[in-house]
Each structure stands twice: as structure tokens, then as C-alpha cells.
Image (tube, rainbow, N blue to C red; front, side):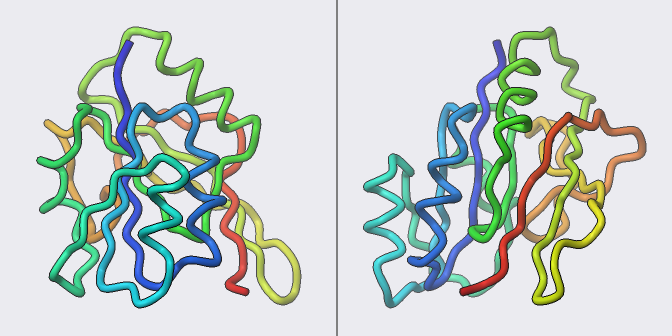
Length: 158
């Protein structure tokens, strides 16, 4: 069964971090990379079970933090995002199947706006560390990713 490390980059996300971390139950590790928060972001992330690394950089660059991950599969999300129950179940089911390191996983991202919810967009969000092509905080778009059922909900900022 492959292990998954979720990586979230944060800065002053105390109002959002607990929901994001709590929704990552299918992940074996949650790694929060904090970029100089002046609020309770780090304390809340730890309280909900995340391992926090305080970064001296302002750049949200996942590639430099992949060596910190304890697992080979890296799942990237924002602190404003959380997994729907269906996506959580799909991710758990995925871990029970034999995986190729060439596989990339994509998710349907549903974004809340001031006018309601947008149409879901497919985004690559999980890759094996050996084949990662990072685009800042998330993996670059894969040619033929496996799309999991369920939604990744991106909530409006409070």
C-alpha cells in the first residue's frame, strides 16, 4: 500500500488550516510548510496532527520540500481546500491498488466565489516523488492523469 504525504504551503492561514488538515485523513503524513505566519497557523496545524516546517523562503516551492516527505506519493493542496467525503473515499480506495510510479492523479476542483460555485476544473495534484515535475506549489499538468471521483473544494477566503 503506497504512503501519501500531503504538502500544504501556508502563511497566516489560521482561519483555514484546521479544516484542510482534518480533511486529509487518507494521507499518512501532512506536512505544512509555513512561510512566516504571524498568527496561530503553526500551532493549529500541529494540534490537528500536521508536521510543520518553518521555511525561510517566501516562495511556495514544493520541490525543495519533497526530501522532507516520509512517503513517495506527494499530494499538494492549498490551505483553502478540503477533500469531499467522496474524494476521501476514492483516495483511500486508490491506496489499495497496485500503483505505477508513472501514474499522476488529478482531481476535480470546485471553487467557491462570491457569485456561487464554479464548474469543476481538473487539476493534477498527486505524483510519485521520482517523477514529479513541479510547477511551484503543485505538480505540473500530466498528459494522462488518473482522475479520482469526488471533489476538492476550494473555499472562499473569510
